[in-house]
Length: 349
Image (cartoon, rainbow, N blue to C red; front, side, top):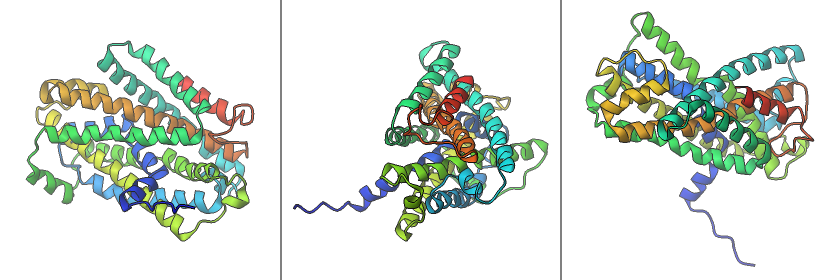
């Protein structure tokens, strides 16, 4: 019997990237991009340091949720159900659903606006199109197919890194603002700081991270709870690497989004920005069509990445709270409360 070839360190590194990478990348959804862009447009580079401060905060919480899923064999709500009364979890799940529904609506609008700028197709038509495509994909694709697509969609976030380098920034003062935190001055600065913190550390990511650990276990054949409970030291370390890379990547992208807005919009005194579409439109005369195209492509990519994660996290939270059958590999007939509720959430947004 031929010996199986051992993976090179690089191949093994990329094979480890999964739930942690996609969950971290989904933090940069269209509404998050708008928040970071507004901060850069209004305050320049003065809040670049937040990308480094929020990195360990986000990483620790995200890894804690990953470990909960790996060790208990349940999602976050399912694990909490063993310790908390159901009425308390219902309140938490309802709050999550309310916040996610609003965010999905904003993300669908941002994704559709970007599609309109790129193709000229009416944004209302694109909203329906994206909503239907995402819903059908979640219902009919197997988990490994969904995970594969989400993993590759993270590459679209490099558009924001490339855009910043196209602008040829002067790194001296930029690095100073990045590594030497400045105390926010005035109401507007504090408002932007709170918006960044709220956007970066989002509850839907925690529910999704833990539930994806369960999906990963199911995908390798551990369908029963007793088979999923516990995790080896190697599995824990592998997921720690995955989460660490995902969160770092997310915050690097956040850094470059703020930087791009600071170098273009703030430098030209265009501070009255309220949406990601306005950012893309304002970039064109300042940074050229290539930078604008990268920005809009990135918006579409992260929208397609974040919207199913937002909707899925709510579906997992409710299903685990009430012990309903749930899972991305389950047919609608078997998980009629999980899949239809998830689909309705996406379509209604």
